[in-house]
Length: 141
Image 1: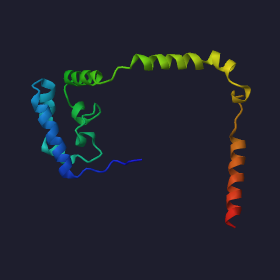
Image 2: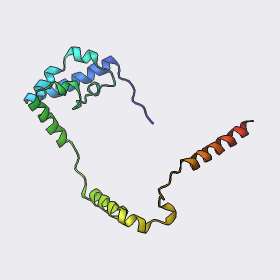
Image 3: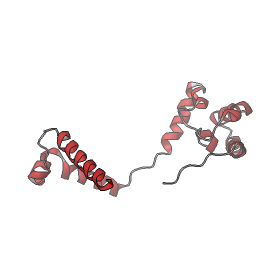
């Protein structure tokens, strides 16, 4: 799995400058307020873990939380517009899956050995683990 590499302070500053240029292009009150809220003091506090350092404005960020309520709502409206719509084929596949695996159909279609009997299986699992551990230890001796 690829791990995210930390951004240097120069990379963070460059990213924030790019973000500010994007915000400056729009004259709406929301964008202008965000533009003016991103100042040098804020940029100096950013670490690579902060979404703003990667040009991402999170609805949970201090930047958004400090906006007037009407601008917070405007931001969230924009965020909702960014949600992709579910493709009809995916919706159909989900409905089919739910229909095929609903509880009233499930018992009829699963073989008896796959139906849970409601008993706790931990003692069996613990015994298996202890047996495997013993076998591994014996291999090293």
